[in-house]
Image (tube, rainbow, N blue to C red; front, top):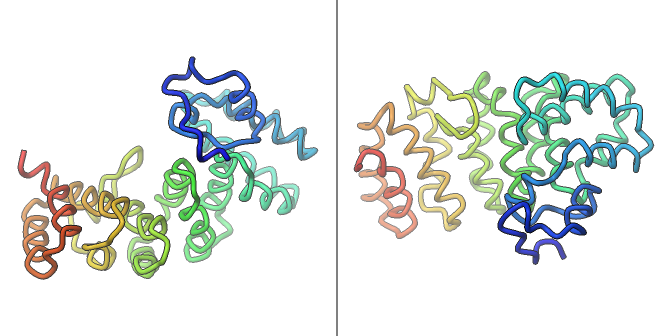
Length: 266
């Protein structure tokens, strides 16, 4: 099973047979090193040949070649949007469905973009469909999927926060974490959400239910959310942390507060 592989520490140490399986889309990447090592253009070519969609290859490759900066994330996004455009044009829903359950994590990342960037879907539909990616077993898919809808969340903040606040009670820790991570005021590798930087109190309907979440994955996200907010509204964050420690003096809350205040206490 792929999840039992630890993966190589450097790209040059990845065994050739593993790299070949990754580029054919037969297995998932085991760690970030492997994730960065996959040749997405080759993976795309193999995927399209395996699914008799060879005619999709050149239009997507042309889009990649036009990128000013080719990074793992920019290529990932370009492939996802390219496949969405071609599938919509050819009424090829069958192909899009295959992507979302593909064994290769990078293909599932492309699939997340085919939902997150589909302008025919309303916000609620997008978030409902993205939830299965939010609960994906692979770290890469979980990170990419919130990036695909980040712009929609920022543009429709009130509605997004209302929907995502319901995710905070979900059984799956990955879904709960998505609610926090996708709305971080500053976030990582993404545009900031100015409304939350200036008025982080808007996010309390998501943060409050998670303030003593048992999952360390969720705790880290909530702590990082408040740490983001502390860079523009430090008094707010100090006040919230004091209140949480008074009302919920659990070790989980203490961990979140320590993480939240790390910039202020420097």
